[in-house]
Image 1 (spheres, helix red, strand yellow):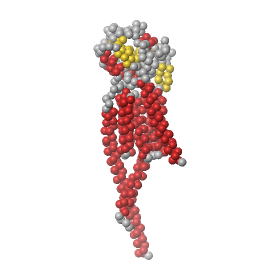
Image 2: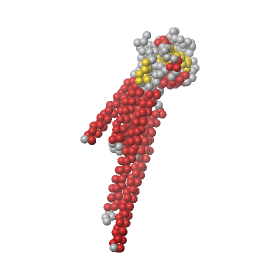
Image 3: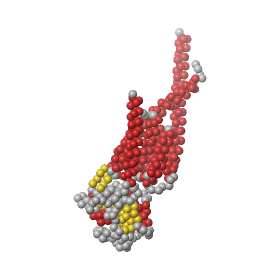
Image 4: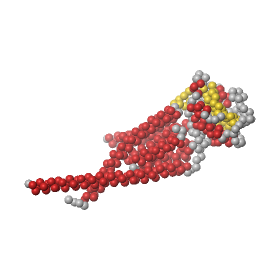
Length: 199
Length: 230
């Protein structure tokens, strides 16, 4: 009797074990490999932006949610891009903050990591006004504008949510700023800054 | 007195002692792993809460899927081996399930820390711990689990294990190769350890046998002296 109970308990635990591991892998894969909403990016630098673009320079703009843990990977990838960028290259990281929260709300580890990248200017994007001007929805969304103000890249620079490492988004941006032809794009992975339905 | 039966009885006793010692040692290691697996589970939850507590949508937040993964996935990985360690310590199946679970715990930790290369060292630390069983087949189970994990994820989800979308087909062999490199020395250590354990059991059996022979001789001598004085 005791043996039968033990066998049943172990069989049950074994089944739960296999099913749970399989379900965990499936759910995490779905979460990490599903991109966020792609940006409705303008073809040229938005004139309504509060950022003053410097003519004759490449300008990269990344929009982040300061509490999105996945965006740590985006910032890490940004650092790799900055290291290989030409001299006439300006980088802005815009960290979202709702107006009802204080300045400290956006001072997260994502903010700190971005400020540590040489040459990167980190600004607060109150109520995602800039994100809306650039047509961005998802944290990690990156735009690259050439010295004439034409958009050359729109997308993410990570392979998956929260995964730093070599990926085609990062490679594409580096290729473009170093004389590569054509516009580039890549899915963006991160938390939502604004919902797609938001005005 | 039958002197021919002496070596056979000593060998049989040595085998008995070896099995007894092994049962005690394996049970002790099973229980240690049960604690370790529990601690690792808590560490996974702590890492998830520390590194990625919430997923955000604007100013709204929900519990991050990594926290659920740490709690539920960690429970799934940990439940069976802990039950086996408590109710069936020393059983051969117990240590093989522990080996598989330990490798899955490594995979979970690596994932929760965003694939940090430093966390991959958990795999090699785990192999060293598993070598305490002095059972090379346990290391084989752990290696098969690691290699299968890399092979299957390399086919269906290469980004999560190698960080690139199109790794070479043989990349899993490179990763598994380092594990095999580690295994080679650990397996040698297991074989030497088993040989020493068997030799220790044999020495103990011999000592027991000699002690028994001495006691029989003393008893016979005392009996002879008693007869002489009577």
